[in-house]
Image (cartoon, rainbow, N blue to C red):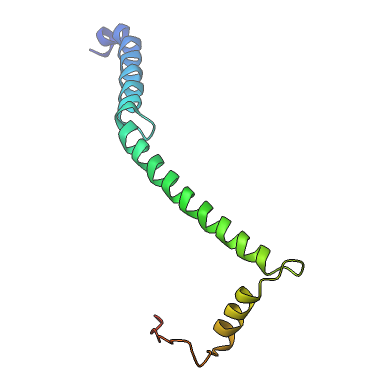
Length: 100
């Protein structure tokens, strides 16, 4: 019986390889059916990148104000009060419980 099927084995192996690669081309991580998921991931990561860049630009601007040559008195006072825990008598103080 094996002798009768032996001529078909190369054809079956090639068919199996074609099926295997076609299946993974459609359903794999980078397959054709996962394009929408990848696009959604890309959109989410792009939004997160924009948010992080905006935060970075804000931090860079605040750091520029704290440098010696262009020291901002208001920003320095704000940072000193927040770090030391002091408040001006005219300030409104709102205590917020920090999560542990």
